Amino acid sequence: MYSTSIKQNRCRVECIIVAEDIAVENFVVDTGAMYTCCNYLLVNDKLDETSLKDCETNCIGGLIEGDKVRFYKYALKQFTIGNIDLGEQSIWITFDQRVTDIILGMDILRQIMMIINPYNQQVHFCRNYIDYRTNFEPLLCEYN
Image (cartoon, rainbow, N blue to C red; front, side, top):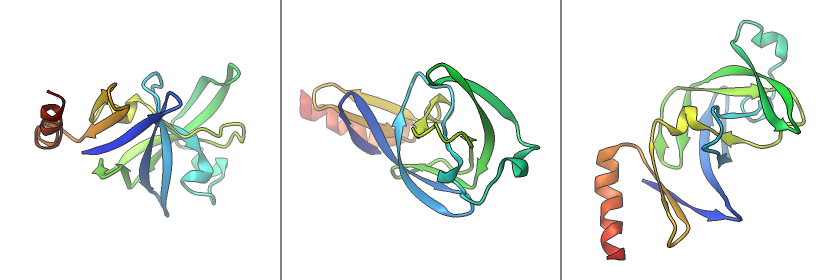
């Protein structure tokens, strides 16, 4: 289980991404976002758009004042939320410098359990039901 706080109505989670290098960044949890996305500099600052010409692309709107932004599907060797290793994952990267947010979207979030506790403003992430039963259910006893 991994837990973090809600601050200023935003939830940020520390994630480890492994591509050519290893990066540790705070992603903004966005349950309204379909895709996990960021600027290419986060995953590999040596990339250029021509090297991704064979990758799947997607134009996503709403990030920059309604403008659509071109994203490329990029395979990672590993994606970890806190201490929850999700193994190989694909995220969406862009070369558009206007994109500065690092978004953790539903494409990855739907693979884990996420519990929001309004009493202590904590968000708990569990890998699966066993992780939930082992780590989260004892916490519920504290509130009863």
